[in-house]
Image 1: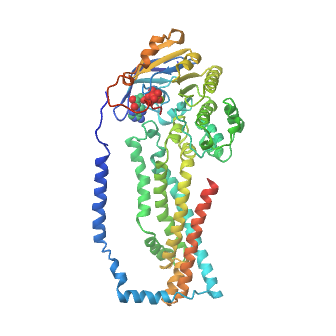
Image 2 (image 1 turned 180 degrees about the vertical axis):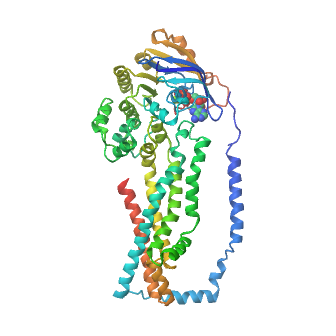
Image 3 (image 1 turned 30 degrees about the vertical axis):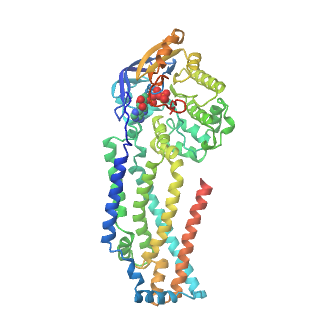
Length: 275
Length: 266
Ligand SMILES: Nc1ncnc2c1ncn2[C@@H]1O[C@H](COP(=O)(O)OP(=O)(O)OP(=O)(O)O)[C@@H](O)[C@H]1O
Ligand SMILES: [Mg+2]
């Protein structure tokens, strides 16, 4: 009893998906009023040129470097402390939100029962709430609540990033090979152990690289939040820009570049050494 | 009674009927081989017995429990007493062999002990002993992705030996091994079951191995039990009927196919 399909049954869905992507992309460009032409208009280009000309020479007086060093350390500290707090919340929430550890999925070929799906919603909902408000808004709120300074930045990063980390972790658990964890669950293993033995070995590399990338983003975010008074390099840039000190701004931009380079290297080294 | 199936049917989510009207009783300590052509339902039957698939009809009784009437916790306790050797060993590539073997007892350990064991293997000797019985002792601290197919398959078996379950299920446990090693491995499994008084059910593609190692043979075809006999009573005619395949007759008058016919072994 062989049924021969003449055509690949996946053709139609794929065509529809392509059409859909094109349909969504075009209005997006229209609505956002993307117009690269303004960059080339004469007075705009001249304005930018003047600003950029100020960048050289880089500011490098001992006094400024000391200030820069302090601000950089503060930025790193804000990003790291924020990430640490975020992880405290993200890891448990991701375990609750992911269906990779569903007991009912283990004997229903990966399709959890309706009951088990419903139980995952509160955790998913929490993660959505946490990441739906941008960190800059949280920073503004916390600057009101706890005053100017790094604490506001740390709390803002912790809240938004726990939502992002939790969501992506949960999806990483679901995207790796589910069979090792299912085999363990079927042999009576508790869920946490099945996670540690069945999912983690396959998910660790991706989790690590995403976490380091997020740390890099947290550094950038802490700079932006500096503009609203949450400390670090951002506050410093804000000051330098107001004083039209192009050289100082350029030095600080160079520092960003070095920080991102550092994060990139860290990610590479960790992935090579630990895994 | 180690297991009792009555009128069990299993239909996969896509509507594929994998098992129908299975009646089967196996006493404690019995050793049974399940044979049958590819796609017959051997894996489905073993997964059903491992509570890895829920039947769509009939009643299943394992180790004097009704697994699908139990709560989650009680079912996990029952599952810790059942070990399944999978057709393709489900081991993470980056995991070390010693960890993969020790994971066999996760069902018997509390979860803190399980996590502690991940930091430092708590029973290296136990893992090594299980591996040594399969001539794999020196691979204890290698990573799973550094093993050959047959070695990986033996790691999967060592895990279940270490688990020491009352009901041992093996799905083509020697499909990736050479004949000598296959015979040795089946002997190890049978000896282990006999020593511990455990029940052993294994599906096999090699009929000679089934007849050589198992006192009771069950033939499965198209999701049904075709025969269930002591090995002395298995006739060549019964085997021929079991494996007969109309699709693979050479007189197939389709467009000429190039190359040989491939039977998937997944
Ligand atoms: N997850 C699944 N979803 C849908 N159908 C399935 C699934 N697993 C197996 N089947 C179907 O159920 C039938 C029995 O499959 P099963 O894996 O039990 O065969 P088998 O006897 O183990 O074969 P083999 O010797 O090739 O391993 C086959 O027709 C197969 O296509
Ligand atoms: Mg099979």
